[in-house]
Length: 290
Ligand SMILES: Cc1cc2nc3c(=O)[nH]c(=O)nc-3n(C[C@H](O)[C@H](O)[C@H](O)COP(=O)(O)OP(=O)(O)OC[C@H]3O[C@@H](n4cnc5c(N)ncnc54)[C@H](O)[C@@H]3O)c2cc1C
Image (cartoon, rainbow, N blue to C red; front, side):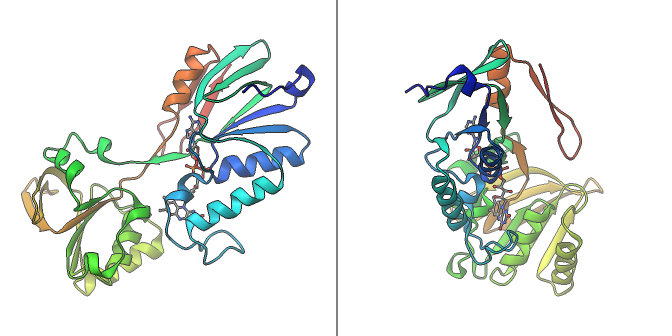
C-alpha cells in the first residue's frame, strides 16, 4: 500500500520511527500541533519496552498499579482514539533523500515526509554482549538464566531458597537483587566498577549485605561460566587479581541497554541522507549530519 500524501501534505508529514511510549507521545503532540505524523513500528503491537514488563507502574502519573502490558494497551487505545496513522508490523526498509524531503519505505508502505523523528529506543543487552566470556554459549540452551528484566521469575516456587547471581550494578541489577532477596536463599551481586543505581537502591543493598542476604563482588572481571543441568559455576577475577569461583542455581544479567539505531544508521547511509553520531558519554548525544 502507498499512503497517498500530496506534496502540500508531505510538507506537514513527519515520519516517527518507533512505536514505544516516546514515539507515541511524539506523534500525539505533532498531531495537536497541526502536523501529520505517520508512526512506524516494526512489531505487531505498539508499546516498545513496556510490552516486556510485568511490573506495575510507579512512575507514570495517574496510572499506578498497571503493568507494562496494560500501559501499552492504554497508550495504544489513546492513539486509536486520536485516529493517528500507524503502520504496524512495518519494518523500515529505506530512508532516501529526495530534495528537501525524505522518501520513507517500510515493509508495507511508502510515503514522502518533510521531517523524521527517530524514537527507536533501546534494546536490552543480552547474550551477544557477553558472548566473548568462555562458556557463555551454554546459556543459549539453559533454563538457569534470565537476560530480560521483564521476564525475571519472581514467583517463589522458581527461586525459593536458590542461590542467585546477578550481574550489573545499575538500578536494574540492584532492584532485581532487592526484589529477589525475599525469596532467594542468597544473592551474589557481580559489579565490574562502581554501583551506579540510585542512592535509595544502594542503601537497600547495603542493608541486605549487613544481614548476610547479599554478597557484593565489586571490581571483578568475569572469566568463565560452566553451566550444567544442576548449577552454574562462575569464575571471576577480583581486584587483587585472585581467581574465585561461586556456584549458583540461577543467573540474571542486568548489564544495561544499547540504542536501537544499527538499522537506521545503515539506511541513512544507503539513502545518502547523512550519518548518525553517538557520543561516548554516559548519556548519548545523537546528531544527524545532513
Ligand atoms: C522490565 C522493564 C520495566 C519497566 N518499568 C517501567 C515502569 O514501571 N515505569 C516506567 O516509566 N518505565 C518503565 N520501564 C522503562 C520504559 O519501558 C522505557 O523507558 C520506555 O519504554 C522507553 O520508551 P521509548 O519509546 O523511548 O523506547 P522503547 O520502549 O524501546 O520503544 C522503541 C520502539 O521502537 C521500535 N523500533 C526499533 N527500531 C525500529 C525500526 N528500525 N523501525 C521501526 N520500529 C522500530 C521498537 O520495536 C519499539 O517498539 C521499564 C522497562 C523495562 C524493560
